[in-house]
Image (tube, rainbow, N blue to C red; front, side, top):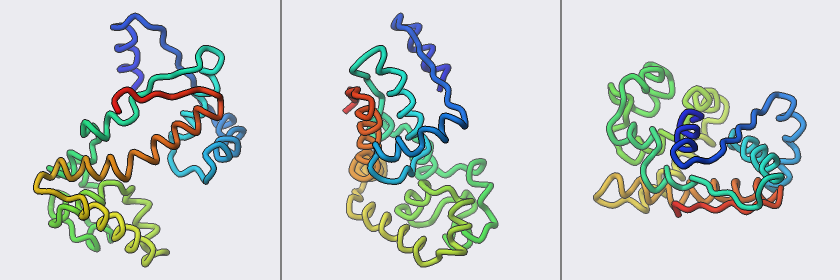
Length: 193
Protein backbone atom coordinates (compact mmCIF):
# COMPACT_ATOMS: atom_id res chain seq x y z
CA UNK A 1 0.00 0.00 0.00
CA UNK A 2 3.06 2.24 -0.02
CA UNK A 3 2.14 3.79 -3.38
CA UNK A 4 -1.28 4.83 -2.05
CA UNK A 5 0.24 6.29 1.11
CA UNK A 6 2.71 8.34 -0.90
CA UNK A 7 0.02 9.48 -3.36
CA UNK A 8 -2.34 10.61 -0.61
CA UNK A 9 0.52 12.31 1.22
CA UNK A 10 1.47 14.21 -1.93
CA UNK A 11 -2.12 15.33 -2.57
CA UNK A 12 -2.61 16.75 0.93
CA UNK A 13 0.98 18.00 1.25
CA UNK A 14 1.98 15.97 4.31
CA UNK A 15 5.19 14.22 5.28
CA UNK A 16 5.33 10.43 4.94
CA UNK A 17 7.11 8.37 7.56
CA UNK A 18 7.76 4.74 6.71
CA UNK A 19 9.13 2.34 9.33
CA UNK A 20 10.49 -1.03 8.36
CA UNK A 21 10.53 -4.06 10.63
CA UNK A 22 13.08 -6.80 10.39
CA UNK A 23 13.30 -10.24 11.94
CA UNK A 24 15.24 -8.91 14.93
CA UNK A 25 12.54 -6.33 15.65
CA UNK A 26 9.87 -9.02 15.57
CA UNK A 27 11.92 -11.27 17.88
CA UNK A 28 12.69 -8.44 20.30
CA UNK A 29 9.20 -6.93 20.46
CA UNK A 30 6.95 -9.98 20.14
CA UNK A 31 6.49 -10.50 23.89
CA UNK A 32 6.03 -6.77 24.58
CA UNK A 33 3.36 -6.50 21.91
CA UNK A 34 1.61 -9.64 23.17
CA UNK A 35 1.71 -8.25 26.72
CA UNK A 36 0.17 -4.96 25.54
CA UNK A 37 -2.51 -6.85 23.60
CA UNK A 38 -3.27 -8.91 26.72
CA UNK A 39 -3.63 -12.13 24.74
CA UNK A 40 -1.66 -14.08 22.12
CA UNK A 41 -1.01 -12.34 18.82
CA UNK A 42 -3.24 -13.81 16.12
CA UNK A 43 -3.04 -11.15 13.41
CA UNK A 44 0.18 -10.58 11.47
CA UNK A 45 -0.23 -6.81 11.38
CA UNK A 46 -0.20 -6.48 15.18
CA UNK A 47 3.56 -5.98 15.33
CA UNK A 48 3.38 -3.48 12.46
CA UNK A 49 0.94 -1.35 14.45
CA UNK A 50 3.13 -1.72 17.54
CA UNK A 51 6.14 -0.54 15.50
CA UNK A 52 4.17 2.42 14.19
CA UNK A 53 3.20 3.48 17.70
CA UNK A 54 6.75 3.09 18.98
CA UNK A 55 8.13 5.33 16.22
CA UNK A 56 5.27 7.83 16.15
CA UNK A 57 5.46 8.60 19.90
CA UNK A 58 8.39 10.95 19.30
CA UNK A 59 6.31 13.01 16.84
CA UNK A 60 2.69 13.01 18.01
CA UNK A 61 0.17 11.91 20.62
CA UNK A 62 -2.78 11.40 18.24
CA UNK A 63 -2.97 9.39 15.00
CA UNK A 64 -5.79 9.13 12.48
CA UNK A 65 -6.42 5.66 11.10
CA UNK A 66 -8.37 4.25 8.19
CA UNK A 67 -9.38 1.28 10.33
CA UNK A 68 -13.02 0.46 9.74
CA UNK A 69 -13.18 1.79 6.17
CA UNK A 70 -12.88 -1.68 4.57
CA UNK A 71 -15.53 -3.08 6.91
CA UNK A 72 -18.15 -0.39 6.25
CA UNK A 73 -17.33 0.23 2.57
CA UNK A 74 -16.85 -3.41 1.45
CA UNK A 75 -13.16 -2.92 0.69
CA UNK A 76 -11.95 -6.48 1.21
CA UNK A 77 -11.33 -8.86 -1.70
CA UNK A 78 -13.05 -11.61 0.29
CA UNK A 79 -16.33 -9.72 -0.02
CA UNK A 80 -16.17 -9.59 -3.81
CA UNK A 81 -15.05 -13.23 -3.95
CA UNK A 82 -17.90 -14.28 -1.68
CA UNK A 83 -20.50 -12.45 -3.74
CA UNK A 84 -19.22 -13.17 -7.25
CA UNK A 85 -16.60 -15.91 -7.05
CA UNK A 86 -13.28 -15.62 -8.81
CA UNK A 87 -11.87 -18.47 -10.84
CA UNK A 88 -8.26 -17.26 -10.69
CA UNK A 89 -8.21 -16.69 -6.93
CA UNK A 90 -10.02 -19.90 -6.02
CA UNK A 91 -8.24 -22.11 -8.57
CA UNK A 92 -5.51 -22.97 -6.06
CA UNK A 93 -7.92 -24.75 -3.72
CA UNK A 94 -9.80 -26.76 -6.35
CA UNK A 95 -9.19 -30.48 -6.07
CA UNK A 96 -7.92 -30.25 -2.48
CA UNK A 97 -9.46 -32.23 0.35
CA UNK A 98 -10.88 -29.06 1.88
CA UNK A 99 -12.56 -28.09 -1.43
CA UNK A 100 -14.21 -31.50 -1.66
CA UNK A 101 -15.25 -31.37 1.99
CA UNK A 102 -16.72 -27.87 1.63
CA UNK A 103 -18.68 -28.83 -1.51
CA UNK A 104 -17.34 -26.00 -3.70
CA UNK A 105 -18.65 -25.16 -7.17
CA UNK A 106 -16.43 -24.86 -10.27
CA UNK A 107 -15.62 -21.23 -9.40
CA UNK A 108 -14.60 -22.13 -5.87
CA UNK A 109 -17.77 -20.80 -4.31
CA UNK A 110 -20.14 -22.74 -2.11
CA UNK A 111 -23.75 -23.28 -3.07
CA UNK A 112 -24.85 -21.90 0.30
CA UNK A 113 -24.07 -18.17 0.50
CA UNK A 114 -23.39 -18.10 4.27
CA UNK A 115 -20.87 -20.94 3.98
CA UNK A 116 -19.30 -19.28 0.95
CA UNK A 117 -18.73 -16.00 2.78
CA UNK A 118 -17.42 -17.55 6.01
CA UNK A 119 -14.95 -19.67 4.01
CA UNK A 120 -13.42 -16.49 2.56
CA UNK A 121 -11.88 -15.71 5.96
CA UNK A 122 -9.82 -18.88 5.80
CA UNK A 123 -6.28 -19.51 4.64
CA UNK A 124 -7.10 -22.79 2.93
CA UNK A 125 -3.59 -24.24 3.04
CA UNK A 126 -3.56 -23.81 6.83
CA UNK A 127 -7.14 -25.02 7.17
CA UNK A 128 -6.35 -28.13 5.14
CA UNK A 129 -3.52 -28.96 7.55
CA UNK A 130 -5.67 -28.20 10.60
CA UNK A 131 -8.57 -30.16 9.16
CA UNK A 132 -6.47 -33.31 9.13
CA UNK A 133 -5.31 -32.91 12.73
CA UNK A 134 -8.22 -31.04 14.32
CA UNK A 135 -11.23 -32.06 12.26
CA UNK A 136 -13.86 -31.49 14.96
CA UNK A 137 -12.46 -28.12 16.06
CA UNK A 138 -12.33 -26.80 12.48
CA UNK A 139 -15.90 -27.91 11.81
CA UNK A 140 -17.08 -26.35 15.07
CA UNK A 141 -15.30 -23.02 14.36
CA UNK A 142 -16.78 -22.77 10.85
CA UNK A 143 -20.18 -23.70 12.23
CA UNK A 144 -20.08 -20.95 14.88
CA UNK A 145 -19.09 -18.30 12.35
CA UNK A 146 -21.76 -19.47 9.93
CA UNK A 147 -24.43 -19.35 12.66
CA UNK A 148 -23.42 -15.79 13.63
CA UNK A 149 -23.55 -14.75 9.98
CA UNK A 150 -26.97 -16.31 9.46
CA UNK A 151 -28.32 -14.46 12.51
CA UNK A 152 -27.58 -11.16 10.73
CA UNK A 153 -28.59 -12.27 7.25
CA UNK A 154 -31.06 -10.08 5.36
CA UNK A 155 -32.44 -10.21 1.81
CA UNK A 156 -29.51 -8.03 0.70
CA UNK A 157 -26.29 -10.07 0.49
CA UNK A 158 -23.97 -7.08 0.76
CA UNK A 159 -25.86 -5.74 3.77
CA UNK A 160 -25.55 -9.17 5.41
CA UNK A 161 -21.79 -9.21 4.87
CA UNK A 162 -21.33 -5.67 6.16
CA UNK A 163 -23.42 -6.46 9.26
CA UNK A 164 -21.16 -9.43 10.00
CA UNK A 165 -17.96 -7.45 9.33
CA UNK A 166 -19.11 -4.60 11.54
CA UNK A 167 -20.37 -6.72 14.42
CA UNK A 168 -17.84 -9.56 14.54
CA UNK A 169 -14.67 -8.66 12.64
CA UNK A 170 -14.18 -4.93 13.24
CA UNK A 171 -14.32 -4.90 17.07
CA UNK A 172 -11.23 -7.09 17.44
CA UNK A 173 -9.33 -4.95 14.90
CA UNK A 174 -10.19 -1.75 16.77
CA UNK A 175 -9.22 -3.28 20.12
CA UNK A 176 -5.92 -4.53 18.70
CA UNK A 177 -5.08 -1.18 17.18
CA UNK A 178 -6.06 0.73 20.32
CA UNK A 179 -3.96 -1.49 22.59
CA UNK A 180 -0.90 -1.33 20.33
CA UNK A 181 -1.09 2.48 20.23
CA UNK A 182 -1.83 2.88 23.94
CA UNK A 183 1.28 0.79 24.70
CA UNK A 184 3.12 3.91 23.49
CA UNK A 185 0.67 6.48 24.96
CA UNK A 186 -0.81 7.39 21.59
CA UNK A 187 -4.51 7.90 20.95
CA UNK A 188 -5.72 6.35 17.71
CA UNK A 189 -8.79 7.93 16.12
CA UNK A 190 -10.84 6.28 13.41
CA UNK A 191 -12.66 8.98 11.38
CA UNK A 192 -14.52 6.52 9.12
CA UNK A 193 -16.45 5.29 12.15
